[in-house]
Length: 317
View 1 (cartoon, rainbow, N blue to C red):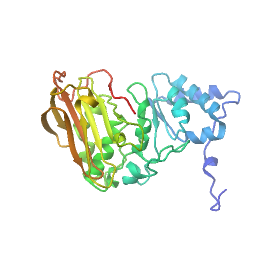
View 2 (tube, rainbow, N blue to C red):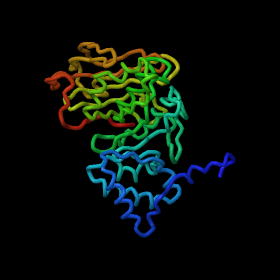
View 3 (cartoon, one colour):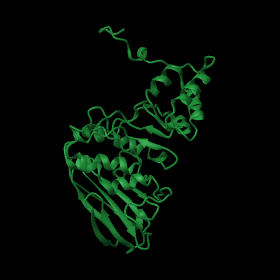
View 4 (tube, rainbow, N blue to C red):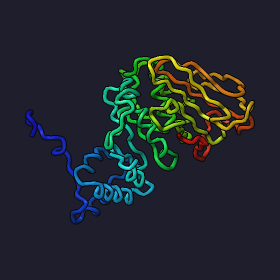
């Protein structure tokens, strides 16, 4: 008991010891009886700490066996030891950063920036977590969970766009935690159809570097099934920076072969470009570009969602 007479956190939760007789039958029977298609399992680091990694692995294995392809498993508060070795075997989505809590720029980019822990939460802010685990994210492989977005807690429109864009570029679930009486003008951010289309397509981008100390970790690239490239340029700093993308060196598009560059936040076509795109990014802002090479297959209908995954030819440093 704590000094206030309340139970400690672990005392308020019930755990299943997988080494006890009947544990497998109980776990599988429980999840079979739920009758749901999506299951979010929380406090996983507590279970692994209490019972060890071998027991944790066994419990997830039983859950995954019972879930099959019919139950989506979201793994929350995982230690992700050995870069998610256990979680990757059994889960469909993993949390990669600390809780949103009060939100704001602290959650988006600055909390424990550049710092890594060996256990949950390995990364304190959403940007670091998405960068660090970007190599395991892919459609049909693993979805990264950056936690809930509370855009009403961001200081500016640019910060709102920054956080939402990060989740889209990383292929994260787009989870809204704003309330009807707090959401304010964040509605227009959440309703950007050109960004939602990317998520609908199962788009997953990757940073040009997974080293958090590298400026290239703030430049993201991915490719759509129709051949268009999506480029995300982010400024996490307190000063304006110059950022951009080289079409040939970094995208593999030959010189003069870009038919159009489109700004997905301004909803504006910037036209043909030859070698590169460059821009000045204000503090805590971003640019999301859709780059169409010449000869790229066009959609027949606005916001079409053809089948197929997303590819990228970008190699991380």
